[in-house]
Length: 128
Image 1 (cartoon, one colour):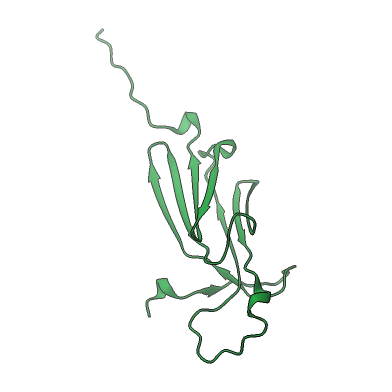
Image 2: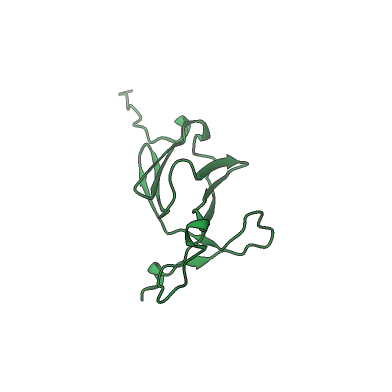
């Protein structure tokens, strides 16, 4: 199994929620207008995901209904069930007021727009 496909447990030193916490897989891409982030959050929907931005840190938390698994006795398991948590330090070149988020089919898509002064621009050249 590839390292990219392994669910990584996150240290829950001061966790306030019961259950395991995992670091979700992400894809990050860049365009002239900003950065996009796709976060894999299986079992999470718009009611159980929180996205925050504070002091230059983007935080993502997704909760899975763990009680759905209480009465199950695993016979074979490759899929570990737990909540998700991920944090990123974000460049000051991002406009935090313009961050957009949407979730569909367990994938959270974020758009982090560049601050106006950080966008690429063309400089006009004049003849002297």
